Image (cartoon, rainbow, N blue to C red; front, side, top):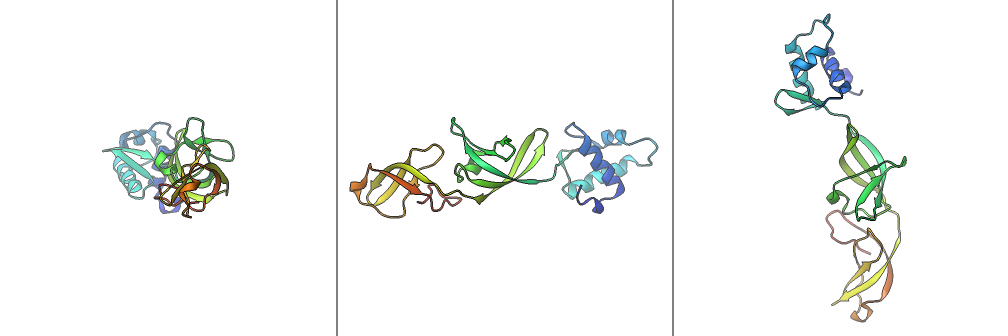
Length: 194
């Protein structure tokens, strides 16, 4: 464990008990029962250690008097994949698939490589942050939709949103097939630019 040098002896024992437990939350009495009888550690020392660990953000207090271990953050490279049902998921090199909130994956395209920060809670991974690492350039096929100089490519490939074209086109190109490469897709942008 990192940062254990900054913890006192009692805090390290309490943290180890919470980390090793399969159960969710503990109060100070339950932690005290797990400490061997021959140790001279009182309940008040355990309670102050629990509060200290909470302030150091090593554990959380979901309800008054109950404490829970927080696993440290892990960063890993994932690939954004698109399912047949229309969902975007994250897949790592070993083939493990995790879900992230839809609004977080909205501005990522299929086959993008992203760096994901997450915490493990049992078998589940709680995603904390997602950042783009690499975008694979790709030509996207679709049909042009031109109106008053504004041009969009209505994509035929699943997982790709409609693409706004940088160049203004004439209305007579409306309905033609075209291929476009995405140039940018910023975070609060509704459509990628190609």
